[in-house]
Image 1: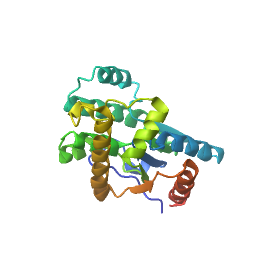
Image 2: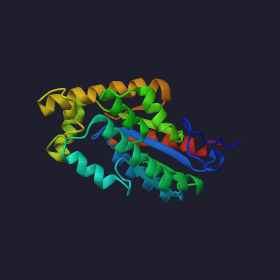
Image 3: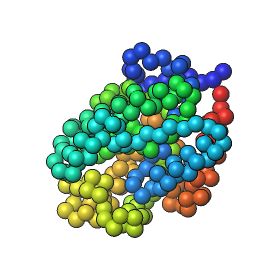
Length: 231
């Protein structure tokens, strides 16, 4: 018998879990972990094999993504405002992309999911219980893979790609250090610890992403194939 989807908490009104027939797979990881590259490879692999996919990710909501981007450029958002901005972004994509795609039997690939949002907020001192309630609307994914990369390696990858370090991904808003390089290392170490804490509750898989793209992709394909074929 096919396993029914469920929600982490109260879910969405009038949405029946048994109507969600697709698969939801989340790929988590910091900027520089290879997350977006892996998802692009997975989409190509899945669609080539005849499996329709849909994609979601942070700041992709047509409702608030532009406003969130503008607000972040000012570097003045409070932790609660930032948290609720991202929660709104997620909720809009949930209602308009994730749930319809699952109802249609699609494989939904999330380029980060609620765990990144919760980890970010926890590092900024938000209450974990409050966050769990906030994201009680989220469907439980069929699989979650966290691409783990050492902070020192993340620095090199981000500098190689962008020649700079992102203000928010360096945790500069919470005053860990005035030096962006040092702050990045401290913030990403704290994020890694937050993910390990969340992993105890949500039981997602941690993937060593300090390896080559092909090596990581091969492992993800094998694990995702097992999820898709499971009934």
